[in-house]
Image 1: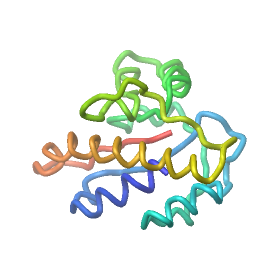
Image 2 (image 1 turned 90 degrees about the vertical axis):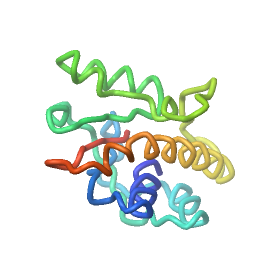
Image 3 (image 1 turned 135 degrees about the horizontal axis):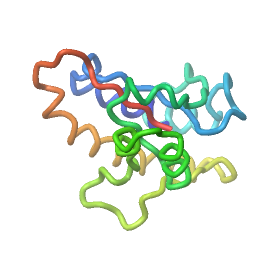
Image 4 (image 1 turned 120 degrees about the vertical axis):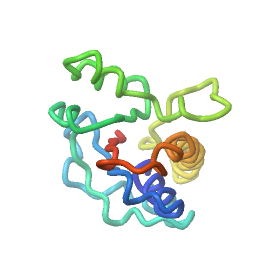
Length: 155
């Protein structure tokens, strides 16, 4: 959901060509699968299209090409930082909700997988707020002339 929302927000802001946005999980159990139907439904209900998403697993070799790696919870953050081989790469890993202003008390985006459709919608609301804040913080730099678009990965 975070990738779909950020991509839509960047497109709406005229910044889609300045960002390379994709998502990947830390585990391989859903690789190649579509997004959970409840996630696609929640996205559609809020005007987003998540129908083309396919799950993939994060590859630590990607760190060299990424400027920012956004984790949705502390367990993902811990795994991603453990996969990083340099302090520079570890510093690229940030929690999505840490970009919210004001910063929330709880920084984890909960995984709605074992919950109901209503919780998927609630999680989508958290993601929308955080993605808006993230894009607002990136936008000034993205509006500057650049050599190549920054890359970020959400997972």
